[in-house]
Length: 307
Length: 131
Image (tube, rainbow over all chains, first blue to last red; front, top):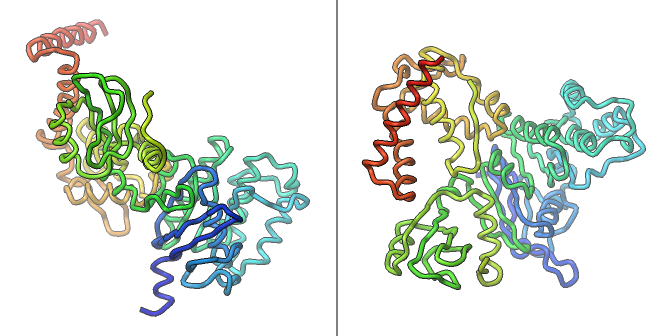
């Protein structure tokens, strides 16, 4: 396979990426492969390293250790070739405040040979943005829409959205999700977006990567994550002050004689083990993505707590 | 065609679409030869990944319920409607299973449950007559 074929298959490839800020390890040996034509959701708490990872893809940070490739290219060495094919919406929506909407569109167009004027104008109308409005006077939602417009109008091969929905009302959030859906529905385009809104990720993502304290805690197709994890509630004959040790249980929650676990692995094995310690399974089902995430995060932390 | 996606009950989204389309067929709200919305349109309406809609449509095609006409969209196939009695029974069975589990947890035995069902059914027919 030639180099360009590889880039087509996986628009983003990150291997062993580590990044420190002073004594803080922001990214710790992170691997990430984003397949083409899919929506990839990056989830994690604030400060987990999501933005730092995205900034490496844009060539805003240089890899200290490890390797970053976007379309098979190093974004530090070939910034123009890489950035020309990416649409990016930053977390802070840093736009030039002194410009008017019309000027922002013309200014951005100059950077992208593939800018689609008709599409840009369609988006402006859909978002109901006044061309003569000054960026500094836009509302929070309008600012996000303006940022989204300039990220989309050159029909990028890779759309990178950093916390696109944070702090937005439902109407603008819908615009953002629709943009993600349209981008991927157009053959071959890829979306990578970070979010702490797990229900949103569950709706639109094909793949999910969970970053926790700079480490990649889990990266898999969302269907696989849902099929692999279970939520099981056990009832014990007597009260317990601590949950039992059972195979596959990531995290326990409960008190008295009823405890719930989020588990990873085979349900049969867990139920068998539960029977052996005289526990009755009173409820079982699939956890939400949010529950899996919380369980993963807590599993990496302190001892289970009694509530 | 109005579908509803819930993220709370743990059922994968593609399966929710499959089940709801089957339900619409069984209840006659969707019939033989009806056209389904294009993948992208349904994805935008439900705010879900288009690949998920595509997967649901694929499953229904494999089951013979939907057919793709070349370049002209997806339709309910000739044998797709009305749903076989077996399929309709399966939908009701799912509800019965859930009811049985709940009744067991609330300490009702089968006889008591059957009596309750009959009692409720009578109430239903009486209300129907009023209308």
